[in-house]
Amino acid sequence: QSVLTQPPSVSGAPGQRVTISCTGSSSNIGAGYDVHWYQQFPGTAPKLLIYGNYNRPSGVPDRFSGSKSGTSASLAITGLQAEDEADYYCQSYDSSLSGYVFGTGTKVTVL
Amino acid sequence: EVQLVESGGGLVQPGRSLRLSCAASGFTLGGYEMSWVRQAPGKGLEWVSYISSSGSLIYYTDSVKGRFTISRDNAKNSLYLQMDSLRAEDTAVYYCAREVASTFSYAFDYWGQGALVTVSS
Image (cartoon, rainbow over the protein chains, first blue to last red):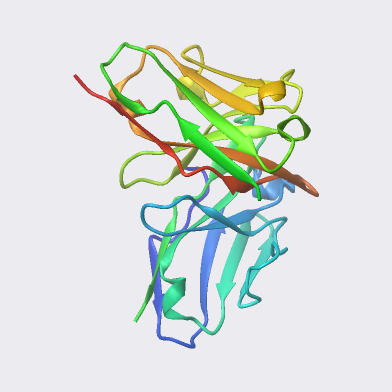
């Protein structure tokens, strides 16, 4: 069972801005642990998109941005493109579980 | 180029064992913490196990404690997951993933292609 909650799906037209929320609790995001985001296409391994709440690995377009506040975090995609259609997962650490936790996942659809 | 390649997946009967391997190349495995992450068919990601760079610290998710064993051989640049007493609910694609430190936690910066484990009679 996932302890980080994400909306099952979000959608937007090309060029629009969409956001994905990731809601945790006082034992994970609220405890100060960083949030990371991954992008996954069907049948492929996840790819690191954002690490340390808002940092982009080399090669990730600046259309992707992350933020964190309190017990939640968000991933924003601006200038939505057809190639952004994928599943997105947040990830953090949970002190009560003594392990890493992932979000429930969000499917982004480009209309 | 960093590469992680899993092997050892397959079809296994409930209660039997399977050992996954992850061969690392393009970097020195001994300099990194590593984890196994799994994904059941059509489901989300689930962290399974962690091992420190030296192998001295190991953690598991509750559902596999006492059944799975993570290990590593830094000299061979290899990571392993021994899975015993397998259950149907262990059916998943298993990924090995390299960890990279952020200020307050670790992220998974490189992933293998995954190994499918199917537990069924």
